[in-house]
Length: 208
Image (cartoon, rainbow, N blue to C red; front, side, top):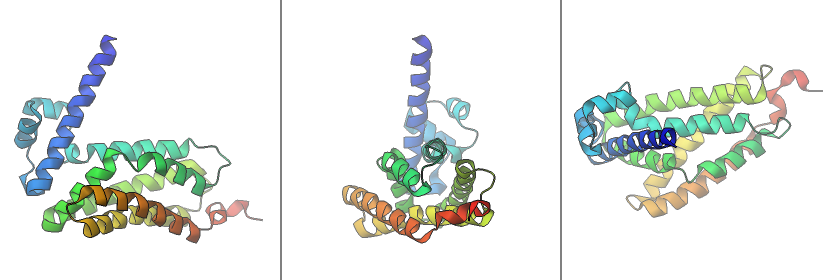
């Protein structure tokens, strides 16, 4: 029981730090993001912040990175014979209402007004795309065509990034509407994506 309580407190502290970082960037851009500002907003010490995160930037992306890792694990754990499209869309339904999607919209709004935030997001997105590519390799095994893996990962992450941008552009500061558009357009984008990818090409050695 005590161990569970400690773990719960740790998670609450991590979440508070992440929320504080997101709010600072949303209000002032990434240039305003400092360890002291985050710690003060979250009600903890600077030392506590660095007990949880190695870098200030890690606080900002912690929730999204955690959700990405969980999503990749979930896709890899789907039944072996299940079509990739079915696996991806099933996992997407569990992801689409997660805090990561809301935070992605906040960061996108901030990037509209901040070149530094946009540059940071581009670098972060590239790391996430690489993680997704590794997830596809885990899901489909060592025989996967590397061109298929890298192309699908780039396209899938392109859908996520582009749909986020479109939803924010269309809804502005109305996040309720943006969230509705984000859900609908993400589903639509992935339907388009898998309509264009021949899953048989993923494992060329198994083609008849």
